[in-house]
Structure formats: C-alpha cells, structure tokens
Amino acid sequence: MRYVIRERFFHLGEDSDITDEQGQPVYHIDGKVLSLHNTLIIRDRTGTEVGKVERQLIALRPTYHIRRGGQEVAAVRKQLFSPFVDRFMIDLPGPHDLSMTGSLFEHEYTITRDRQVVARVSRSWISLTDTYGVEIAPGEDDLLILASVLALDLADDREEQESRKRN
Image (cartoon, rainbow, N blue to C red; front, side):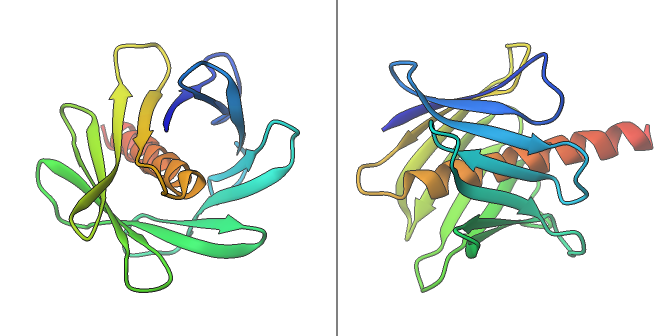
C-alpha cells in the first residue's frame, strides 16, 4: 500500500494528514505543540485515536514510543554513531524487530525485517512542508510503520532545532 504523509503548512504544531495513493484521507496527525514529550496523536477518519507517538524525555539516544490502545507496541531508537546515514531500530515485542536506514543527503529510507524490505520511505525536501511517500509491503502493520516514520520526522525536526540553537 502507498501513503503520503503531508505536514500542514499554516498550522501550529506538527499536524499532518496521511492519505492513500488516490489522495483519500486515511489518518490525521494531531501534534501537541506545547507537550514536553513531542506527542503526536494518530486519528482515523472519524476522529478516533488509533495510535500515539511520544518522545521519551530522558534517554541516552533519541527514543520514541508508539502506543495503541494505551499499550506500547514499539520503541523507535536512533543509533548513536552512524556517519553519513540515519539508523533507527524499531523494537517490537518478540524477535523480529525492524530496522530503518536512510541517507541524510538523499532523504530516502528503507525499513527492513530480517534483511527483507518491508517499506520504502521517500522524503520530498523540495516542497515547502515535509512530505513523505511511504510504500508498505502487503501483510505488514501499516499503522506501526506510518507511526515509525512520524517518529523519524520528530527526531529529524528535533536535531534541526538543536543545531540552530548551537549556531
């Protein structure tokens, strides 16, 4: 399945919309701009909360928790040292974690499980707002992968903010 995640340009916070490849709305992302945790609420078309992405406040490396129905279903952690590429581990219950690897320069990411590609993510950096194209293999947990991409975007935004503060 193919999805497009598009951040709203004139909206306070990290609000986004996720559409299918035909442009039909699938999810709305409600960013909690005043939250210390960088929280994103994922809502279906009826407005019902179906998931949440939340930054862990105290962590050695950037860590985001994905919850469904109040239960944690995954933790997304950025690898500390990884020159020229971004690497994230998507820690799931059980033995088959996901790995997300991407190019800092090309804005392309691949999500794998046991060295098999389960999703491809392409970030459009030419547009005025952050836009991601996400192609997910059949049989995968689409909501989990989309939430992981949202965690990637939060981590990227946070790095940019910290870089601006240092300069």
